[in-house]
Picture 1 (cartoon, rainbow, N blue to C red):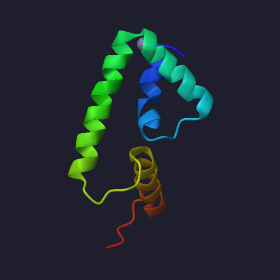
Picture 2 (picture 1 turned 180 degrees about the vertical axis):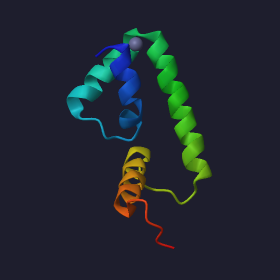
Picture 3 (picture 1 turned 45 degrees about the horizontal axis):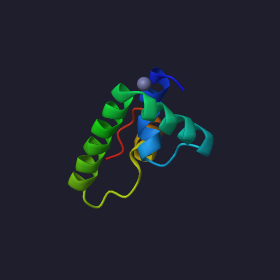
Picture 4 (picture 1 turned 90 degrees about the vertical axis):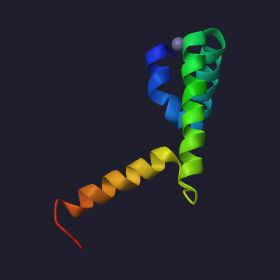
Length: 81
Ligand SMILES: [Zn+2]
């Protein structure tokens, strides 16, 4: 796993949506790449603050983004109010 891949999968990692193999590679990359380790801990802090500020929010970030996106697609531009 390289730095680009790590950047792309950061949110999956913190949402526990990464598969076991990727997770192992992700963690070993962080172990020898200080730059990615720093980015990961920064992202983790952001997510903690974000989740705290969203109180009742239980759905993982990535999952929620998918739901929001599919709702928008289903509406197809029509106003349902
Ligand atoms: Zn890296």
